[in-house]
Length: 123
Picture 1 (spheres, helix red, strand yellow):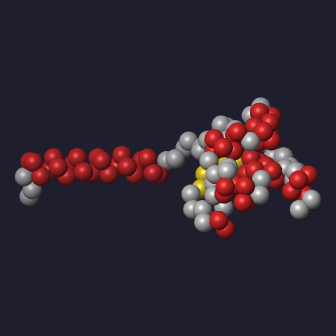
Picture 2: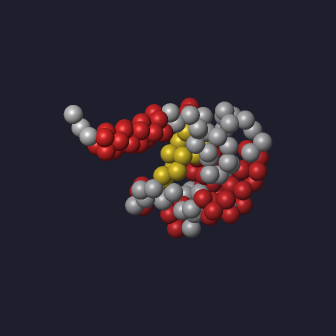
């Protein structure tokens, strides 16, 4: 039979473990899109590599599918790798800033179409 101090330590460890499990097991909060700052429903989550994988990127951010499509409709992978590899740099792009201002008023489940820019269509 363990002593009183040992029982207290075991009880503390178990309560800490239960608290950790509760945080992992119940992620009720939906992630927030760093571009449009709306909650992202599970059906609309897309992982975006800030630096494209083809250019050596590893870090990803969850974005709304429509936001992710709009980024790739306006910018090439080279542009993303060179000068638009942070959320702040993406928001500074005039086309993306205009899109974000428009999409912020839409519900989180909104699905739309992204159109390639004329510049990218000519390539």
